[in-house]
Image (tube, rainbow, N blue to C red; front, side):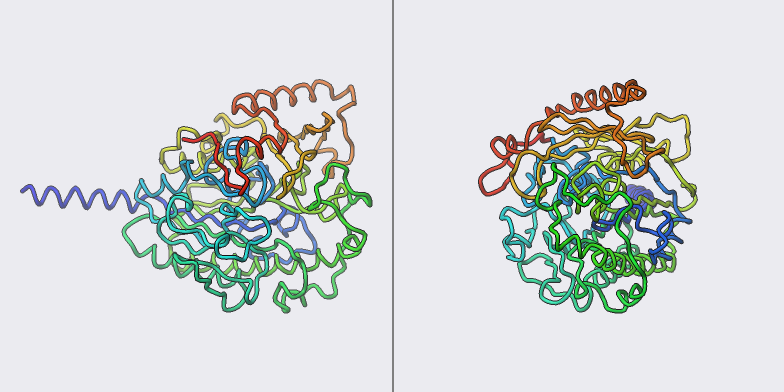
Length: 487
C-alpha cells in the first residue's frame, strides 16, 4: 500500500513538472527594432520574423536598459541594474555571487541549456580568442547553466577559425559553416532531445548577428547578393560630426563615414540570414508540437545607430540603441497584436517567472509586468524605464556616463560630466532631433520625468558615479568584479 501511494504521488509530481511551460529565449546581437519588416523597414528581408510577429504578442515599448552587450546580459540573468551587477563596461568578469534565472530554473525542476555568446567572463581586454578568456569553465561562472552549455565568451567573426564554441573543456569546437546556422541547428537538436524528457526545459539561444564587423566576408554571399541592387541611405537623423559625449567605439572616422551605407548593406544581409534561422526554428517547434506549452521569446540585446546623432554602435539613450524587438507567444494564453507596456531588461526575469509561477529572487530589481502582458489592462505597470550608461564601451574612461528615463511618450536624459539635460517627445519627434529640455512648455514634463528617474535611482541606490569609481572600488586590476550588491 505504501509503495503504491508513493508511486502515484511520484507520477502526479512528474505530471505537474511536465506541465510547467518550457521557455525558449532567443536573442540577437545589435538588432535594432526599426530594421525589420514588421516595424516598417522597406529594405529588410525578414518574412519569417514578420510572420512570427503576427503570431506573437508584440511588446512594442521594450528597451535595453543598458544598451551594451555584457551589461545587458548581466541584467537579463540577474534581474538587477548595472549599478548592482557591477558589469559597468564590456570586457570585465562578472562576480558569480548573484542568484540568476538558471539557479531558480534548476531548483524548480527545469533542464537548462545555453548556446552562443556569453560575454560575462572576460578579464583581459582584447585577447578574446585565447581559451583562458573564451572558455567559461563548469561551475559558478556559468550562473547556474550547469547542464548543456555550448558557448564562448565573445567574438564576432562567424566563419572559419574565428567561429567556435566550447563545451566543458578549453578545446575549441569549430563551426562547420556559418556560425548562426550551426547554433540554430544545435538548438533545434537539443530542443528535440529535451522535449522528449519528463521535465520542462529552458533554452537560451544567443546569436551573434547582426553585430559587426560588417564586411562581405562575414556573411554568406547568397544573402549579400539579395541586397546587391538595393540602395541604402544614411539615417534621417545622421549628423556629420561626432557626438562630443561619444567614446572611441561610438566615434566615426572620415573613412568609416564613407563606408556607412555598405556597412548597412551587410547588416541587412546578416539580418536576412538571422530571419531564415528564426524561420527554421519556428517551423521546427511547430513540427515538434510543443508551442502550446512553451513560452517563446525573440528579442535583441540592443540596437545600432549607423551615424544617427553623430554616433555609431550603441551605449546611448537614443531610440536607435535602446529600442529592441520583443515578441512573445505562449499557446492560446497570450494574445497577438501590440502590448505597450514599458518593459525594461531587468523586468524580463520577474515577468517570465510570475507568468509561470516560479519564485523571483529576492534581490531582483525589476518589475513584474506579467498581469498586464496576460491581458489585465487594469494591472499595475511601470510608468517608465530607467536606462543607464556607466562608462565607455570597454575601457576605463570617464566622461560618457548618462542616465535616462523613457516613458511611452518621452525620453529624459542627463549626462554626468556636465549635467546636460535632454528631453524628447518621441511621438512628435521619433528621430529625437529637437531637445525640449529648455522649452518652458515642457517644464512640467521635464520635472515629472526628472523626479521619476531620481526616485528610481534612489530605490536601487544608484549614486550616478563616474566609471572610474567602479574601477577603483569594485573591479580589480585584472578586471574581475569583486564588490557587488550580492544575494
